[in-house]
Length: 331
Image 1: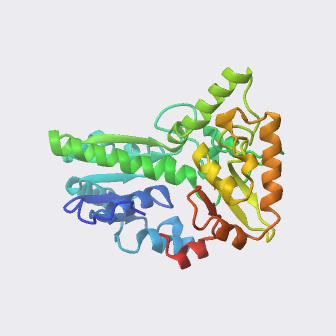
Image 2: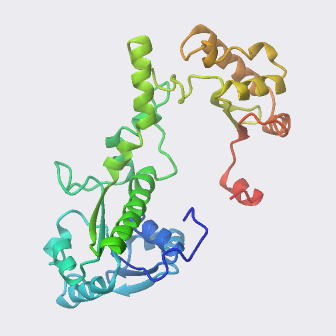
Image 3: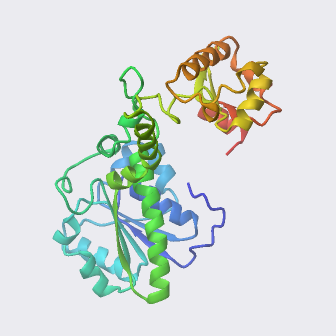
């Protein structure tokens, strides 16, 4: 999962992972791929993710697994002993649970002043939702992200990728942990890294928020779903169905790419029907060109369009299945 190819960056760093399921284990996996040693402490019954063996193996197979029952004094002592020697501790419990076990950050910091403790929760340490249970779909729902996926007919698809867990949780946790490790190295002081998946997902709304403000400024009201600049309102930035029920992703947002695309499709008359030339989403020219584009793309199979755009630089790509991605060795 790590975007960094150097597996020696965190050599000598020890991570103790108390978390289960996806966000925390994915965080420690990325740190491990950067060179850290990960010790995962699990309860006697194991991580709940074991009910999905392939997922559990993907996240945890190369970590050192230690079993400890935190309902016993021995289990709590094991946790403290590991924390005393660790650089990073990842906690996926609800707020207050660690303190109830006698393992608050202040307690553990007294044992290990350089300790970086990262708590990944759904809604943060404080606030009206802090102690509520939740899953990825709830964090997306309460951050505005799920509403942003709403289609023009009002339906909201359930994404196959866990945006809340991985972007709101894992990605933010890795960033916070790395920054805190730098501080510990520089000052000798550890840090408490508070990761709220809902709050961090909200921050990912930077583009929709900016687009909405621009839209209100231009038209006096927000754009409809799938009808603004980057969510389906443009012919040059959209997904189209082909005649064989596959899909083509068109990302010719800049006019230079749209020009190349139009020429490749044999439609030079479309070149200046572009948002940068005044055909903003919702205007009659934009609505018409989007319909014309959909009709054209639907007239041929995906293989035809792959051939058409194979030798031109227009930001147009096939929508691949995961099996195709693996077979083509793109990743």
